[in-house]
Image (cartoon, rainbow, N blue to C red; front, side, top):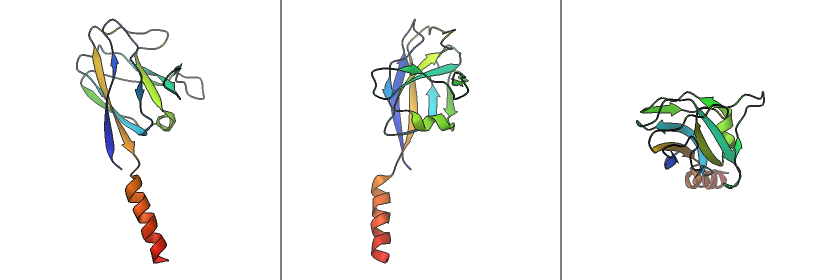
Length: 129
């Protein structure tokens, strides 16, 4: 399956919450943390439509938290990634946000479905019957 790299989101200087980005074309597999990032855990807000965002919690009522350090790549393999259409990053938690000193531009790698190859394989199976 191909990877697509999304440029963003960005947490602006003096803020703790990023802008939103569209991840609906695939499943998040990696987050790249910029070197300028003031170290803090990342928490998330998600949206179905890119307009209204909610904090992301597990079914046990725990805020989804990712340990993040500057200049790192984070492999994301948790089940919640399948449910993300639009996402915002927060440095810190919703109760204890951490403002960033400078603009921090993240990158998100999403794995997309290889639709043309899948359709081709399906056609090949049909002709072999």
